[in-house]
Amino acid sequence: MSLIFCALMVAYFLSWTLLSGEHSLARRLTLFSVIFLVLMLIDVVYQALFIKQPLFTIILLSLLFTINFYSGPVLLINISNRDLNKAQAIWQDISRLDNYPCIKDDLEVILSLEALSAKRFQESINSNNCYIINK
Image 1 (cartoon, one colour):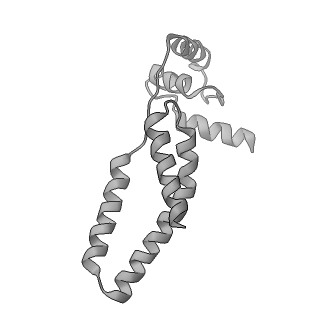
Image 2: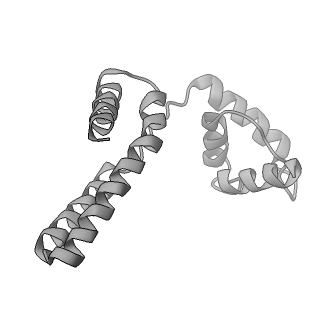
Image 3: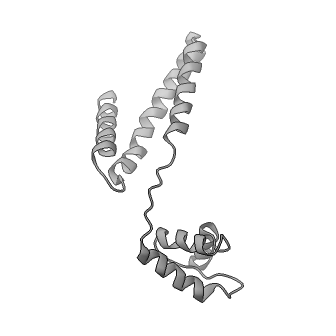
């Protein structure tokens, strides 16, 4: 089991550092690597409860939480002139409406639309509108 975990971690690290773009391999590997991390955490908690090593457990859990917050989300969004022009055209059409329709487009266009509307049109509201329509 540890060999599989090490192979997953090496593949994750290599795909995150050497490959560019959306990092789809690393995002998919995250699901599998979490299983091993949970099993390792259960073992550490078991040892702390029954072998009485609370200091080691506190340090390890603090390190895990720090790494979790340090990694943060990866937001790399480049808005092109084409996306901005498209958002301006959409905003001219929907700005007079009371309820905004579901707009199914790329994230760049939706975020441009949010900026153009001074947050009157919001990505989260659009997601809810699209969810209600698809239901």
